[in-house]
Amino acid sequence: MIVFRHRKTGETSFLSHIDTMRVLQRTMRRMRAEVKYSAGFVPHMLTYSTTPLPLGVQSLAEYFVADSPLDDEKELLERFNDNIPAGLKADFCAVVPQNPNLAAKVVASLYEVEAEENVSEDVKEILGLDSYVMKQFKKGQMLDVEVRNKIFAIETEGKKLRLTLATGNENLRVDSFVESLSRYGVKACANDVTRLEQFVLKDGRFVAAKEALL
Image (cartoon, rainbow, N blue to C red):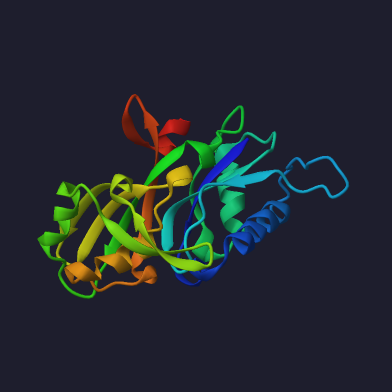
């Protein structure tokens, strides 16, 4: 199994998850990487990814897994980057014996928000609340959603805001959460948000998915 950590920046942040996967799969074909296919009437390339980002949110830490017997990590990284658009280039490649199933194991993400103005320290009071309700579009309607248990950390520095939020099965949409922070005077939109890393749980603490693969 090959695992790439790649970015999703600039114009590529507006690609849907399906279109992003198509680009990644075409990249594997262009780099002539041997990738296994499923059995059945309509075989498909066996590739996997972590939880999709909302449109417009950028990332420096997307994970793409391909079921392949190839094992030269350095060469694979070079070939991948030679055949993919600049906005999706990778900075890390690992060969692992079996599917790491990151989609199920990733539990949180670290995001950085670049706001229009300095962010008030008041936003940190969320961490001391028992409840935090925000609006989120779900199942065709706008609902009030309780999300306090999905907010793990909030840090501020000038116009920058760093958020550690739930990802995966208990996913908290970062674009909806950032929009809700307007009540604290935070002026930012989805394209002002960048995912810096995704985490898995190891011995009760968050560990970068990249480190968990080594």
